[in-house]
Image 1: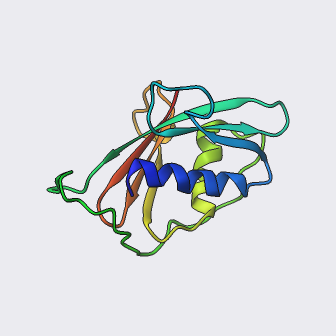
Image 2 (image 1 turned 90 degrees about the vertical axis):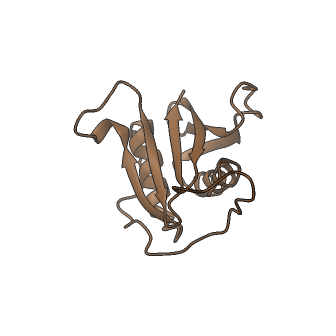
Length: 137
């Protein structure tokens, strides 16, 4: 899944979450420096989190001629629904897992890595080998 399609996917997922009050593209939120991403506002406090999305093609693939064809497999297991009080990284990871998208093979939270850095975000791996890196701005 490429960043443009992933942005649309995230908007669809988030707008159906009862704990989200608003989701919009970064461009709609006034951010013209990041071409792909979303701004998410959760209920209960109105805090907004902005996410930038970048992508990595499957190993050996070239941008020229690469078709963003969905490859389906077993979706990531859905866990508990995201809660309004969750940290943004945990909230988005839970919302995406709950969507049970058959293209998503894995979701990794950066803060739960064995050696986490200071940056919050997610790496989504797809069944076609592509990746999306979603980082909190």
